[in-house]
Image (cartoon, rainbow, N blue to C red; front, side):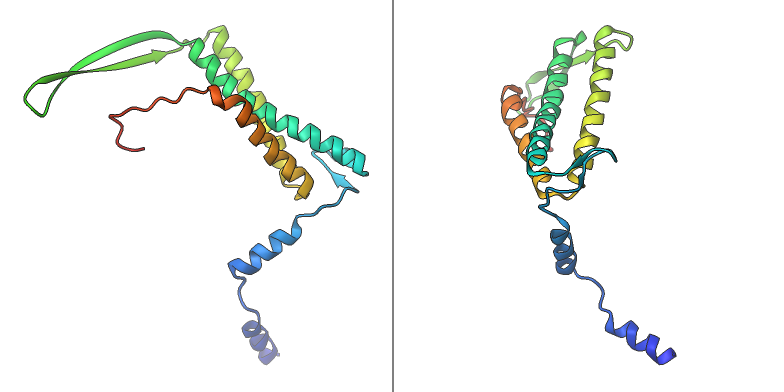
Length: 171
């Protein structure tokens, strides 16, 4: 008996990255029947239902990206309490340079902060829905999540202002 356990122990090789990747790729399916999405009663049982589900998931992912960018724009628009602080810095040639910092704050008990909080909750719930949908490992639904996120980024992020601080050393 001990000999059998010993030989079995040596014959089982530990999984490698290649075997694990192979298992995960095989677990992605392309089925359109009996696919459970989010809730126990929400089943996809036909190609038409899968197309409808993919369109809905695509739009949900677009909404998620829109929520992210919309919340950032709302935050920039509702910022209050702007303060400028200047401090002298010695220049390399002995001159004195002035560095100005802008401090922006927002009140906690303001309508805009309550709206931001509600939108944050919605964004978190939508993100978990998308994660759970992706974790069905249904290829069609995974593609719908990724394509919707890409389309949402394309539609909403182009207007996002990019600010580069040239004094920042960690880019």
